[in-house]
Amino acid sequence: MQSVFDGHNDVLYRLWKHSKEGADPVREFIDGTPTGHIDKRRAIKGGLAGGLCAIYVPSGDLAFRAPDANGHYSTPLAAPLERAPSLDIAVEMASIALRMDRAGAWKLCRSTADIRQCMEDDMFAAVLHMEGCEAIGEDLAALDLFHAAGLRSLGPVWSRHNIFGHGVPFAYPMSPDTGDGLTHAGEELVRRCNQLGILVDLAHITEKGFWDVARISDQPLVASHSNVHSLTPVARNLTDRQLDAIRESKGVAGLNYAVAMLRPDARENAETPLSDMVRHIDYMVQRMGIDCVALGSDFDGAKIPAEIADAAGNQRLVTALQKAGYGQEDLAKICRDNWLRVLRSAWHEDN
Ligand code: ZN
Image 1 (tube, rainbow, N blue to C red):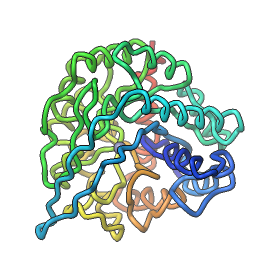
Image 2 (image 1 turned 135 degrees about the horizontal axis):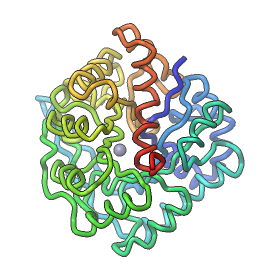
Image 3 (image 1 turned 120 degrees about the horizontal axis):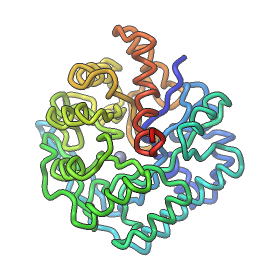
Image 4 (image 1 turned 90 degrees about the horizontal axis):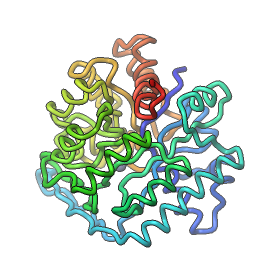
């Protein structure tokens, strides 16, 4: 079995939602639940050693558009969010992450040594990520607090606009070049992340925003949960030029298991064969090399192939990659080592 350190999940969002309905997040994670994708038992069964766990503030007004007769769709961006209620929700999710750590349900990791120790101890290695920075003001004061609470990765935007930049809509077929990139505040945010040792994630940002980060950041370029635009031309996927830039910076792109980002027809159909996942990995490996390809499942945040179903089925992808010709060394890189390498760099452990 290959231990997997995964670039993106929304388990914190699920636990937060259920906590609003009275559930205890610690018990839900330790005891397990039939809903969602990740809990302790299923993670261990599927070799999911840990991953980046997102603080995500939901958009109440997001209404996914049904595809037309050609399967094309374009969901309008959700409206920008207010800062104060976003901060409340982000604090609640960070609090859940901290309580999970205190209760021994998982370990909130702040270094790659922490992650490696978790892998030895069969302890879920959670890294706190923020997907869209609506909770942070232009003065970046809240960034200092979240960093002190363990935040080690962030995407300036989710698929909506905020004071830091512009996100891409959920649309097919569509180029990721849908509008403006980073704002001046967004440029400052990237610089501060570089200083503090917080990874900057390019998932969900417009193509212009991608190039803005590429110009400003002194770190490898990372798209935690994005696939290949040439194979599935949704606005969320990466063009060949973007993949080339990730390769040149020695960054990584993590394979998103969302069927709508894997299938050639971009349909929300769980009956999606593992060969669609392998095809995206093959393309990324050919374009960027084995050192720049990783996993970013989007567990608990997307409809994924029925054959994988949840974290317990994670090794089915590994087996499919093995059958496609990937050796143990390649699989170790894809499953964890490439992530650990870029985290080491982003967290200034190389110096
Ligand atoms: Zn996402």
